[in-house]
Amino acid sequence: MAFSDIFETVIPSPSIFLLVLAVLFTVYVVITTYNRRIPAKAPPAVSGDFPLTGAIQFWTRRWDWFQQMRGHSPSGNFSFHAGPNTLVALSGERGRRIFYENKDLNFNEGYAVLFGSSPQAKEHVKDEKPKDLEEHDNHFSRRLTYLLRNENFRKKLPTLLSDVQDGIEAIRNDPSGRTNPFESIYRIVFKLTIRMVAAEEIAEDPKHFEACLKYFEMIDESATAAAVMFPKVPSPAIIKRTYAGARLFMMMENFVKKRAQSDEKRDDALQYMLDQGDRMFKILTFVVGALFAGLLNSGINAAWVLCYLATSPEWLAKAQEEVRTTAAKYARDPNAPLRHQLADIPLEAWESEFPVVDLCLKDSIRLNLLGTAFRKNTGGREIPIGNGEVIPPNAFVTYATGDIHLNPESYPNPEKWDPARYLPERAEDKKAVHGFVGWGVARHPCLGMRFAKLEQNIITAYFLASFDFQLEDKNGNKLIEAPKVNLNGHSAHKPKVPQILRVFPKDK
Image (cartoon, rainbow, N blue to C red; front, side):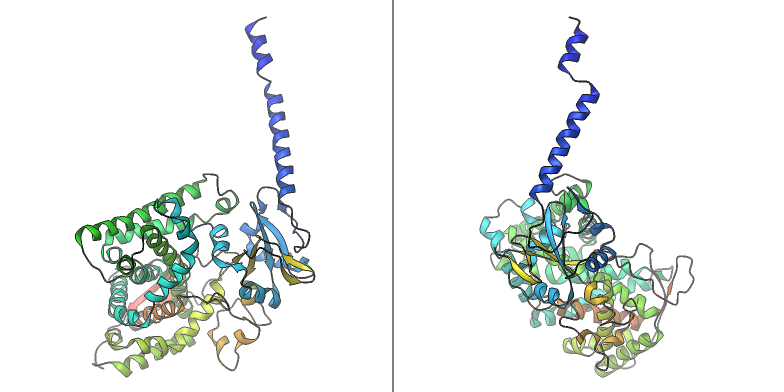
């Protein structure tokens, strides 16, 4: 027998080989589809819930798809898959109350799997114990609650004001006379967040600051559908997230080691956790988690508020008057430039005497808190949701914020930015139970809300005191309307088309 005959006997032809692969793949798909079928009492499955990937449109046009699937379900609830994960989507007032109030729906376990961006400390830190993982939620809440106490705000206020002034001066000194607030203002928010929840070394050293911001944005960009659908496949997004997460953890670990070697003491979050005896795992998990919690929405909305004000003369005038009135009330030198008078405003006034700015922020959050919130049923039992439907044990649960925030029955003309919605005579956020979920509600209020509002008030006040401004397109043409938000986004995000503010520095 010739060698070629032997070869053909041992090695099948390409067509047979491909046929075998096709059969094996088909068997795998059939078995996988059977094993992850929607439980009988769960809400009905949606069309287009494909094997392996699940519902692709959940990733490509989430809000449009949610509305369509909601409309096809008699109860407004429906089930689908995101990769290997079974999800139940809730809607309406009853669904919203269950989502935000039920004690068996776990916030952290839902986001850990389905958010797909925040790195896991256990991937990078070697000294953790199982008990650390179990206690992480309580540890995070305790540490953040302490760091955002009134005495810490009061102590940090001069530094926060100085950081904002530095950021505003950088804009004033830009020879172009223009700024993209989703870069310049976003960076200010990042620095303030670092001040409150991380290490002074990052805030004070430009090299560390730029590196930290770079790694943070790399992780944020890794929140892709593939990273959730195929979490064990080393996709480019997962590789990028792992690399950036490792670099962030290494940076923090180096700071800890240097402080230990030099006996240096700092007045920051890192030092507080070291003094409490927290081990590396807990420190690093807290810092990275707090950065994500504190920046993703605050940094984006701080920029959007300025864009909205630039195209709303009525609300701009109200906000400017509020800044002037509050500054005049506390200024030690009434003849100083307005931006310098702001340094005399006490903490209590920063938090309570900017109601106009607060209204502006609230409607920006309503429009830009996009996509869906997540939970997981960790109670070990079915959760009834009405109409004979249940959330199965271990199923993930999702609720689209647009279900209430873009509901025209509560918010007429919902895609319009309109801070007057929350004035007492309209009170649109009070028309339904949990009618505004931008700061969290019920069992999961936003722990960082107070700080987010404080930094928003400071940044907006300093910007209004320092500049007249207008929104322009890339060619320098003045815009009279802010761009529409892409409602199919998955979270607050920088707009794809850069938004430019032309600034005119004020001398008084």
